[in-house]
Structure formats: C-alpha cells, structure tokens
Image 1 (cartoon, rainbow, N blue to C red):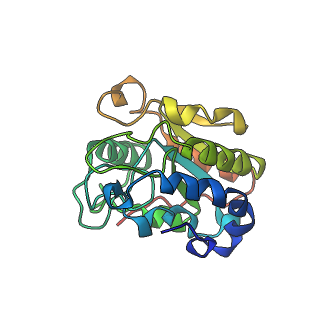
Image 2 (tube, rainbow, N blue to C red; image 1 turned 120 degrees about the vertical axis):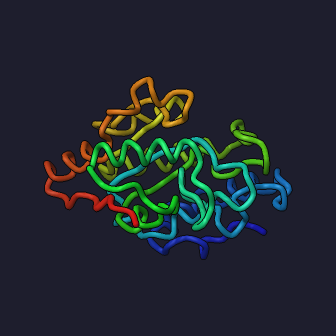
Length: 213
C-alpha cells in the first residue's frame, strides 16, 4: 500500500507532500507483511496537529516483536508487555515527576499533549532490531527534525542516533538512551520531563501534562 497524505493530520500535508515519493520508494523496498509496526500504524505520530507540537522525543526504531509497536516512539499497543527501555523511562518519569508508575505502555496521551514521539527509522523487520537503519527513513526524519527546530519545538534526544539531530535545536535535552545497556550511564537522574516543562514555562508556553494512566 502506497503512502497517502490522507494518513496524516491535514496540518502536516504541505510539509510531507515533499516526501511522498521518497516514502513510497522506502515502502516499496520492504515486504510490508514482514515489517512492524503494521502498515496502518506507521504514520500514527503525524495524526496530531502540527501546530500543537511543542516537544519532540526521538527514538531509534520500532520494537520488533509482532503486535507491540504502535507507531509512536517508545510506545506500545494497549495490553502489550512493557519493554525494558520503556520500563526505564517510567522509572525516570516516577523519580522526576513524583508520579506513580503507569499501568500501560501506550504513550498516546503524550502525543495528545503535543509530544511528537518520532523514531529515526519508522519501520523494522519483524523479529530484528534496527533492520532498516540504513534506509532512507533517516533523511525523512532528519528533515522533520530540522523543520520542527525552525518552529522552536523543544527536543529530548536519548542516545547517539537521536543526538545526531541536536544541531537543529537551540537547547536540546540530551542523555544516554534508556536501554538497559546505557540507562545507568546518565539517563537515570537526567530529569528530562521537568527540564522540558521548565523550558516551556520560561518561554510562555503551557507545560506538558506528563501524567499517564
């Protein structure tokens, strides 16, 4: 199935119109029955209004297990088990914001608050992490980051892949990835949620209500 601008919120269409050809070339490279998230969920991150985006959180690529990824970076489908990286995000969330541990790994409420949860690579092969890391998704998501930086969106960049986009943001919030392999190297204690809210407030914008069910 080819990508259609009907899959995204109308406010994104002028910008993404420049990428339709590239996206369709990317999708044509893969057997779409063997990728995750499922085809209908790949562009979930762009179903919220562009003008509402205040914060960008960048991930690497979708979870490779069937039925887990839902098109939002670090998020999982309702009812899915919470992956290790997201468990670490929730630990920092609790410590930073003094909130109870969420009962679901579905981060859609953040998306609805103006947080764009964007993976550098929007697909992967089922059962294989980072299978599409050398695809042209990187060029598409880099241009999205550039555009959001021009709109003074704030960025939370976890890990080396995300931090390649730091140049597009005035005050990026940077720390190691929440993966169990790196979270203890500075992700824990980095207070990304309160820091971004402090920056929003200091520029006269409403802070994010990070509270999850």
